[in-house]
Image 1 (cartoon, rainbow, N blue to C red):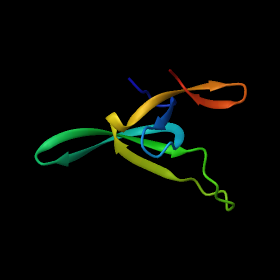
Image 2: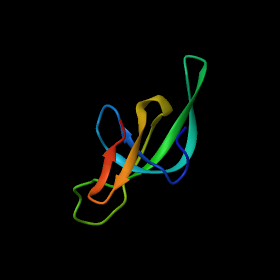
Image 3: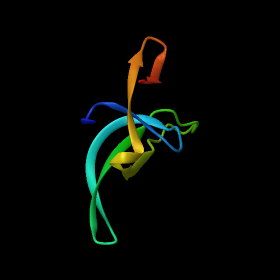
Length: 73
């Protein structure tokens, strides 16, 4: 279970960020939980935050280390 404040990595795009909330999406009549994540590894120079929302199953827990954030095995 990913909680608010955890770091997560998107399994398809590889984006890493901090979980800031939950949401939902209804697809073909099925209620799906989503995660709202503030991306931390963006290349933007203007210091704007980038937010990503996708279904919960698209995210995995990332683990913080001294050298940054890495995917937890």
